[in-house]
Image 1 (spheres, rainbow, N blue to C red):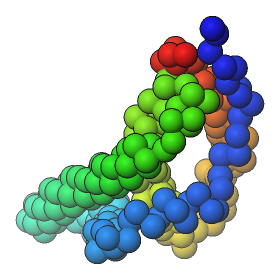
Image 2 (cartoon, rainbow, N blue to C red):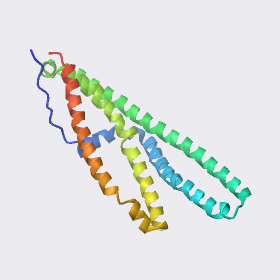
Image 3 (cartoon, rainbow, N blue to C red):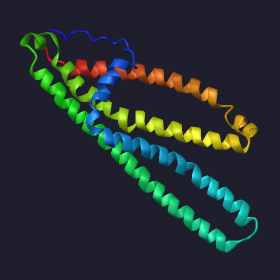
Image 4 (cartoon, rainbow, N blue to C red):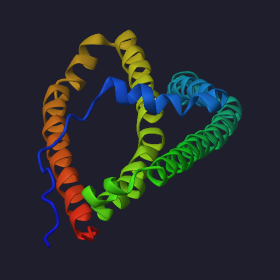
Length: 213
């Protein structure tokens, strides 16, 4: 007997109700989430601090050949760079820990849900589908935290801070630098749609390969 046909049509990638259910698993770790968001704000500020210090060093110390002050400023920049690296390491560690912890809780909840299903449910649902939903799909949730919401928030905040400083320095030159930005948005959207279709094809193929009926 052949395995039931899987639905290959891409599903809606964003669902507010699903996002709320996902965030319900984060509630026990609100402090970690808050610290991660706070750290993303600090990193956004630090990321624009170093270029400003470099500019100040060139304008004030290199131009006037004040080598002693330049050495001190270089030491300060090195200390900031080391501090930023340590903060970024802690930031990535915490959001990955949060993602893995949420994945662990979700796997336990899904496994408990499957164990309490009726026998008729397993007659109608391929085992491969359950395996894919329990392992592959839930593992993708980890990307929501390690490479998703928090990381995107941190990157967007950094970009906004950088563009703000650039506009304050020279808005005309900033607009010239941002001229290719609309083309990047279009290219990113096309790439996102292609990846989404490929993800659903691979997901359905894995479920079909694991199906035992």
